[in-house]
Length: 145
Image 1 (cartoon, rainbow, N blue to C red):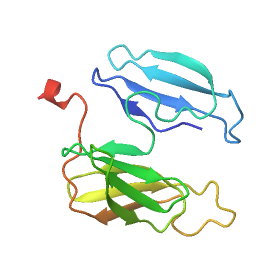
Image 2: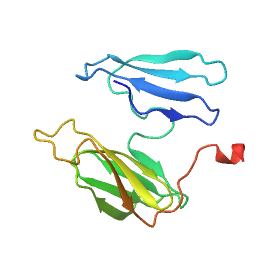
Image 3: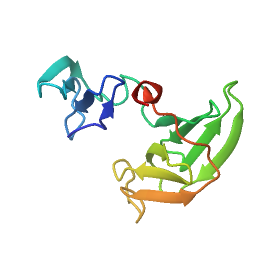
């Protein structure tokens, strides 16, 4: 099962793989070089390879320097100041929010159906909510402008 991919400032895509049953050591971290099309296994022996590259799994930053974090098992997205103060909590109708994305006008949240004994209709979905979030931070954007 692939773990969420991310792109680095050099334009390479990084993605993890893992076993559906989360077998210890069955996962790996791969890098796809967009210039020559090569794929390299950078690290193997992982269990859940989410987020070890550039951004912690389930988090994103905004242009105010704040961190938005999906709270696994907590049915919430939380926004923290650069000093670590909780500024905002957004309730989501799913037990396991997994990742968060800011578009400037919306908060996009992915959720997992994995974990709950009786998943609800919003577990395993992608949700969108209006918010007054500042613009997302795009690593390397100043280099591409």
